[in-house]
Length: 488
Image (tube, rainbow, N blue to C red; front, side, top):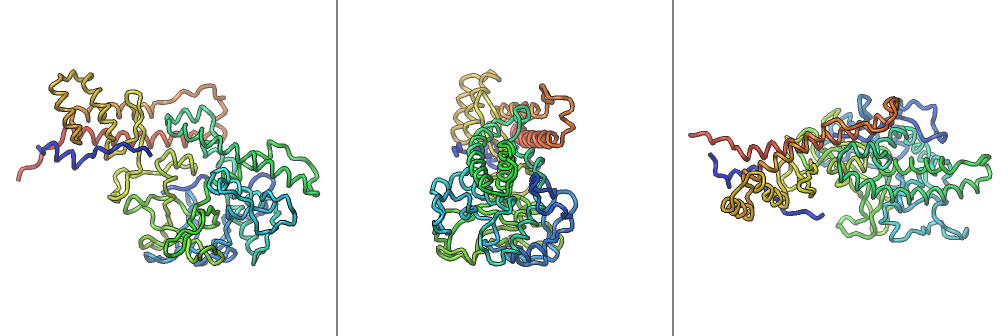
């Protein structure tokens, strides 16, 4: 039998306390409400080559949208590691520092058109930058853009085409937990998700209030507006625009090629780029991210020539889907669901990059305390709590407990403690797949696509957490009963 210390080091690590391919929902082609600009367009016929031409993106002839299952971006021809997959000018994107004129809070009509009344707080506040980008989306729907942009007709046509390809607003809304009712939220059995929703709810309410107030003013000033739009309808339009921003915007740094940062981060909505799906860069092999993105050609205090560039992390084969890592906002699963409206598919057996932390994490409650666990490590605080519980569960005498405690202090995870944690993890995993009560839901609620979408995502999150906990418990039990080493 392998020595316990040697086995523990190989199979598990006791970690110090931490204080700190999946696609977006929907792939429909409807735009919001009655503001559809290309209502007669057959989305399936839209060519990415045409869109690339309108947005001045390159290469224009090597990308296409998948038509089977979830929509994604694939390459016609192979792309070598380090080569450009997609390059789109920042000037073709929606930028959070260039909101529409009606959203700039400028009271003086003679004010400089390049002047933006954006405070430092607004730049970094989620409700601030998200509201400005949402205002640009609403402005497109209002067909009220006043900006003077080179090749404006092409850019406008491209943005209208992009808008026509956005997800159905009802399905997108149902995919985001911030819109879920208490019954669906409770069915996830995920405390971290509930807390994130509470936090997001108030930030969203602030953004919707601000946008609705500004939108009311611009509509009242529009002499062509013949009938008043109800506040509730305006609020819904603002929510829909914010949903688009939340699930499709990205953050880029304003920095020179030598890494010198010259301004606050920029949030952008980049058409075509936003069709690329997510995969993890923390795993290797099939299903991992094969591309990365960043801003190139920017100069100090000057982004006129800057481009958002996607480059291959490894060789991408002909017909292979382009996948990028959405970053920390896409991990763990509950945060990805909160941010983007989907639950990532974790391969718990995939090889990981040694320098990167595990992202397949589940929450585990023990003795009233919450811990984040992954299949290959145990939080040190959890070991301490489980050690105390072990003494009660297994009637360990004081001398034996003292020995266990000494080994734990030396960074060891003993078999008795591992068994206690494994039993609790299994209990929690089983509880996640026990059918939840339907409450007072109407019988015909399952006929509504929106409810089905939300309930399905809640179920997927529970199953994802279940799989992590079961793998976690399995590894712990292997620690308790290691297989004997084969004799030479």
